[in-house]
Every structure is written in C-alpha cells, then in structure tokens.
Length: 283
Ligand SMILES: Nc1nc2c(ncn2[C@@H]2O[C@H](COP(=O)(O)OP(=O)(O)O)[C@@H](O)[C@H]2O)c(=O)[nH]1
Ligand SMILES: [Mg+2]
Image (cartoon, rainbow, N blue to C red; front, side):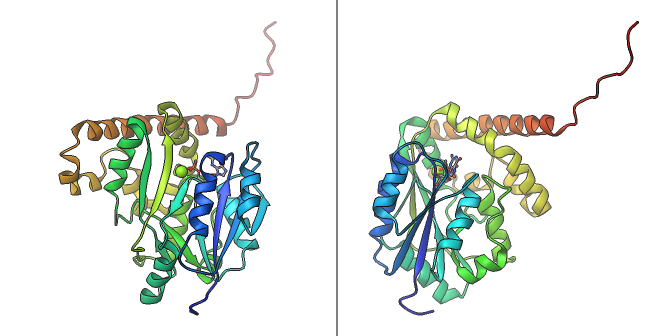
C-alpha cells in the first residue's frame, strides 16, 4: 500500500438535501489525502443533485436502490480503496486515515467503522442509546471500507437486497475472519425520527431481511432477534441510568418487529399465485 493511495468515497442519494451538504463537507475535510468523491443519485426531486455537483468529483444517476447505486459508484471510481458512506452520515476527520491504518496493520480486506446515532427528539435519543450498545458487535456493525480488490472479488453489493445489504457484503468479504475497526467513528444523523416512518422503513426492509436469512442460513439467525439483543445485557450498566429511554427503545424494537412481520406477510401474499377463476357456469 502506498502512502498516497487514492481512496474513493461513494455516496448513494435520494432526496438527501437535508443532510448531504454536511456529509460531503465531512468527506472533503478528511485529514487524509487524496480522496475522490463520487455521488450516485436515484431520481431525487429536491436540491440533492445541485449540492452533489457543487462538491463531488463524479456525479452519476442510477437505480433502483442503494446497492445498485453503490456498485455503479464503484465502477466509476478510480480509488485503490472504496468507502461507502450514506447521505445522512458525517465522518469525523480521521476516519479515512484510521481505516488505512487498520488495513495496514491487519492486512484485512475491509474495515468496520463504529457508528454513533444523532438526531432530535425522543425516538432519536432512544435510538442513540440502543446504538451505543453495539460498539464492537460483529452481528450489528458492518464493514464500509474495502480494498478494491476484495470488493471486486466479492462481486459487490447484492442488488436484490435493500436494508441488510451491508451485512451480506461484510460476510462475503470477511470469509469468516474478524474484521478490524477504525479508531474513529461516523455520526449517523437520523434527524427527527417519526414513529410511522421508522415502522414503514422496517416493513420496507423486511422482504430483503428474509432473503438475507435464506441466503446465509443458521449463522445469521441471531441477527433476526430484533428485540432482546445480547448487546443490551452486556451493556446493562450503560442502560441502568436511562430507564425511560431503555423502555422506549425496547418498545420501539417490539413495534419494529411487528412492522417487519407485516412486511414479510405482505411480500408472501404478493408472491402467492392468484387463484384461477372457476370455468364452471352456475346455470
Ligand atoms: N430511504 C431511501 N434511501 C435511498 C434510496 N435510494 C438511495 N438511498 C440512499 O440509501 C442510503 C441509506 O438510506 P437511509 O434512509 O439513511 O437508510 P438507513 O440505512 O436505514 O439509515 C442513503 O445514502 C440514501 O440516500 C431510496 O429509494 N430510499
Ligand atoms: Mg440512515
């Protein structure tokens, strides 16, 4: 690895004007250089494309969802390393340099970047407390930083998955080995989370979650435990001073589990063949 290796940061967007400028500025403010910034939009109707054009080196349009956008971004990117960042994320200034350090010391194919949730309101505070329990947890945190060689050898993101596509790629790239973590983290700006929107997202991701469990089998069934994750028991000391937020996020997770089950049932109903009409006449 050369000290001046190009790192391409790829950001998929869709109506991301609320958070995109801060996201792209945080990439431009990385202490590591050189960085190439690639934004792939998916039919935005707000100011996303304008913001992207003002900040990015490469701007493209592709779809139908984030996995295809990221793969397209990787095709257009020139970097020896690929970092996939969501449009609602902010990188602290050392993230890229720390990922390269982690690769240099471990010779791993990819790096997991710890994530901290931020946002306004009660649900966002519940989410932030929940998320704080996942630090170092391989069943929740997925890799975002890849050597191009490992990414290409894996075939990239599975374009049939939306939601668990990051877990899926991590499993395929890691080949059973533990991936290193960067010393610095990403802030995930979830804004003012609304209950209906949170549940709608779980319902939307549910068919992909089922496809993911089918694809990877038994080893991933622990991730299907949406409510009482072992991470909460491990971090009970962190939760104890915040009983209201803890009950809040456990209730939210229970509601998300119901929304997910609803999404699965809907997907099943859609895939059932329609009953054929009887050809018999009643006369
Ligand atoms: N919600 C959504 N995000 C999309 C879509 N297409 C691309 N994205 C991008 O996918 C990434 C993740 O979306 P987000 O809503 O933050 O999902 P999260 O991973 O559940 O937090 C962001 O970079 C979005 O801009 C889409 O159709 N819907
Ligand atoms: Mg997000």
